[in-house]
Length: 295
Image 1: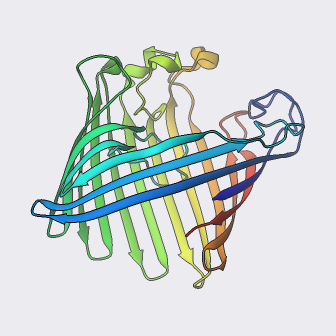
Image 2 (image 1 turned 90 degrees about the horizontal axis):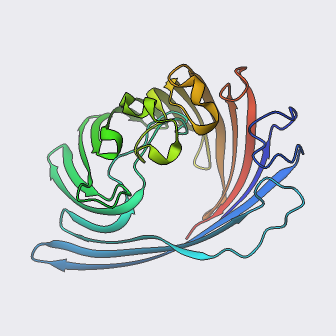
């Protein structure tokens, strides 16, 4: 279970971060709950597993007068694996970027049929995924990864017949002791540039033609971890409210924060975001305190 307290910068009444146009400063509250069910069985074809995750959430939708309410229960994941085969409803094989991980694109939770082949120092995966269109053509994703000592690299590509979209990512991570550093570059085809309506855009698109990401985390001790991430989005694709700026906007997003494990299974986290994606001026955007109980 996670409970969030978030404060957004709404000092400017025209700030588009004030999603509900309340013009009020205050805390947004939100909770998320997930319950996992897993089974495992050894077979002549490899491990046979079943995973089901149920979840519920509720938030104040940016309005300080609104109270938290009861959340409806939804199925977040439901899939089966057999050896290298994955089939069902789960995370796309197309990963997200590194860095701040908010400007980049990643595949949605969706129905997939995928297969992963592990080799000595890495793996290769392919999947056919539901792209949200009622047609015969699924999205196709391929991912290859390898490890070289403390360094791991991964490359991913996706083709989605929605607007004939294709995308690619390249990741590199370095981990040694308490320090971890990661970098990524992501490309989304400009076929989306000519289609400003969000409903016509591929679900795999980053919303920027290029996104560069850089991140770092450091374990100060066995309880405290600090982290920072930076995303740079190049050539923002048009949206319904910003159709005249298709392919012209570049945005920075910086995230800094810390996780502190107060006791085993209970973590308190803080994160602050800084960006220029709304006003064109690099400034504080929002901050969040979260409390996570895990089993």
